[in-house]
Amino acid sequence: MALLAQMEALGFRPNSVSYTRLIDALGSIGRTLEADVLFQEMIFVGFRPRIKLYNVLLRGFLKKGLLGLAIRVLGVMGDLGTERNQETYEILLDYCVNAGRLEDTWSMINEMKRKRFRLGSFVYSKVIGLYRDNGMWKKAMDIVEEIREMGMVLNKQIYNSIIDTFGKYGDLDEALEVFGKMKQEGVRPDISTFNSLIRWHCKSGLLKKALELFTEMQEQGLYLDPKMFVTIISRLGEQGKWDMIQKTFENMRSRGHKKSGTIYAALVDIYGQYGKFQDAEECISALNAYAQQGSCDQTVKVLQLMEVEGIEPNVIMLNVLINAFGIAGRHLEALSIYHHIKESGLSADVVTYTTLMKAFIRARKYDKVPEIYMDMERAGCTPDRKARQMLEVASLVLQQRN
Image (cartoon, rainbow, N blue to C red; front, side):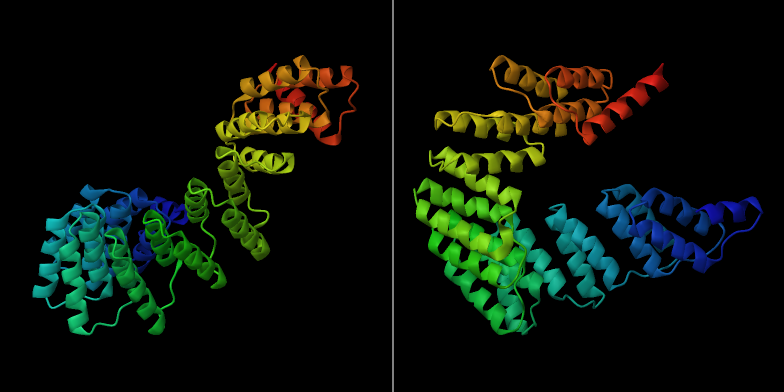
């Protein structure tokens, strides 16, 4: 863009290829408005873009919901006599489906048929998904039957759409049959495939099969989806199947998920909800997991559950809560926990003071940092390197302000 500005300042303009590449680059990183300005300039100086450039702009505009700009691009295409290609129709079809515009979707498909464009797996998977999401079960299955009669080679997208449609309407045997056929034909299931199957089996109360699918997913080396784990253990918790929860969690730990904060927090949260806390170590692990995400409400919830279980919060746990409030930008709540520590007769440690200082620096309340530092020295705590660095930063900012 800087080079373009220099060229124009010297009275030169890029050629058609340079315009195309620059607009393509801007569109690919989401800078659609800048791409549109260059596109208009390109048209103004008399260049005729190729269809690839129109498609780049359409995809970028529709992805951001800029329907007006997309319509204008289509208008320019019409004015300059540029015909839509397969990719153009698929971009427009994708938008219509995602927007739930059933009539426009069929209008687009009929136009593709008239112009003899191929209706491949991408198109059919989109249509099946649209019918499924609009509760039109029979229509979705008619499309599946049409695909079977055509002998079309199915790809992953269309398999996933069919499986999810069967699952949503409770026909899980059919969903599993399609799943088996998918694997037989060498199409590797992805995380969306397993998520769909696990979700609908859990909803139907078929937890044993859901766990089998969950295990198969992990055996295939697919990235663990925390939402699916939470769904499964929530259902198991409702049924009081604590041994199965523990077994599932241990299997996950053995596969390298021991350090996953979201997973550990979910387990402890479910155990706490149903009164199944084991010990303070699990509570601290949950607190740390939530605090690192700045999930203050969940952190407080775990502390409350601990109190019900008779586990007294100590300075370590309260420091974690200060950290959670600090990450969330809630410095006043962090300060209130510090006062609670002192009023409870507990001894604040270096971590307490440094975590609190960090919370105020995050909130840009630099004037409070020296006060906390002095409190730390008065309490007989030796400031560490981190505390001294934060004091220096705060002091420097305050000097600049004055």
